Length: 178
Image 1 (spheres, one colour):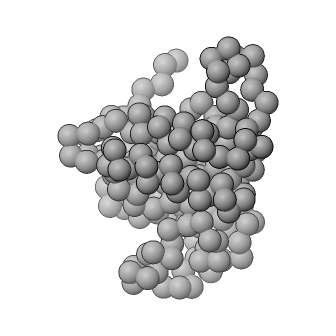
Image 2: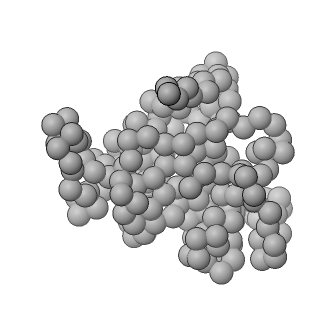
């Protein structure tokens, strides 16, 4: 079966991007800083809006909105992954298998990523909340706001969520992808 991606110009998309072998290469703060710089660098050349994001040790979730008339998130992800790989601590690069070595590729990211085109405002809200609750779900933080690599603090500062959001029961059934 051939997977078809949704390419809607100006669309908003939820992504899950995973490190190769689920290695925790994004655990060090300096690796997260390199990822942030990769995103800034790519956004400067190929604009998009990061609506929400969380970076966990072995994967990240985010929502991007592309400019009107532009549906090319695939090139953006390729550029982000490549920039990060070229600028991260070489110790983060895993041992490449024969296929990767033959192409001169590093073992940093899984080749593929998961994407979902957001359908409406409710779909957006569900995925934003999934992103922000993810560190608690994985046992990395006691509360969503306690996780330092999340856009939740931006939402709290803007008055969109209270500081104690996610400290009770959060219903996220059927949302997101691990």
